[in-house]
Image (tube, rainbow, N blue to C red; front, top):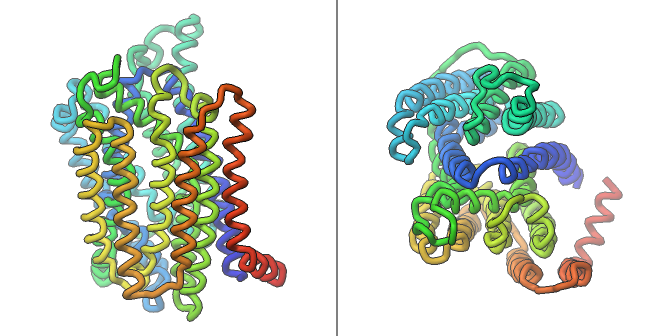
Length: 501
């Protein structure tokens, strides 16, 4: 049980920093919806979806491979770090240079004529992200949770301050005569461009600090180390693409699949901006999953040699489902006031109906992450390719079929359909090759009950705010009552075990 306490403690550190940092970053949606046009938001949504895909390509699963080989018995962790970082620096510079040169062609294909500079900045952002990936992974492996969290927070704060400076403060200073027009080349007609510049500058400034904290490395590319790592990580590249396909492909393709004038007064790019902004309301679930992943991945590998590890993994999964289902209900039933609090401007509320579905999709992403430990520990990472391929196909097919007919709801359905299929398949093969005693029946019951209560609470109409607030949030108590009834004996054991340890 001390292992669970260790995981909980590290998840709390990662979670607090991640939730705090991303919450600060999330507040930028107030700035974007308040100061930028829906077309700018559409551009931000589409291009940052592309960045999400290419981030996976630029790191190609080497973070997990680094964890796996650094914790092995036959290799020096410092040599693994030096070789992995050398490979990532080399490959990211090469890929970034190629993308930089292809920027005019990409801008033309994606319908951004005359804005090829956006894709040159994208190339630099991707390169900076890639060269930071392994140093951040090393901090996690060495249990330097506070350093990791502090570095992430510093990066986010820099990004937020630069966004505020470029989008709000400088235009106001220029308009009020505090700065001359065109100060330092500032352009009043730019909008989304300043989101990219803020990200680029913040990432560039953080590199020396993170490299110093993780420890500088001597350039080395030993094929005896790198070839097995590459073989291990290649299937994980496709698994990563599956996750990002589920999360981002709907936002990347939405403006190209939604019919013109599907929503009154909005062109496809503007509708994509509304869709992307609404996606951010599901960020709390994503924050929890990201924090859990930061702590759980190295934890799972460290516990893999323990004969009782399957029972431990099962308890972790069950606790994860209980926490996340409660979170899903709490957000969904309060969307009527949470949504307008963060999403400013008119024309956004119509898309709020997709949020409970997105929350459930993110929850299944977390379940899938728990399940996927079987092929990471048994070195059967090739299974991730087949699961990924099927999940990606499902996601894209649902987008192509559902978005033209259902709009925002069709885009959210792709997220849910993809992760549902991937979770079921991963569970089936996991139990076949690496059995873990999950409480499957209870887990499914909690998931389906929470999803139903989430949409029920969202849909209940009340003219009186406080009456509606009390009625909707009573559904949380109803779900808690179900959990307490079914988990009474287990909660008693868990409480006693924590007290003893």
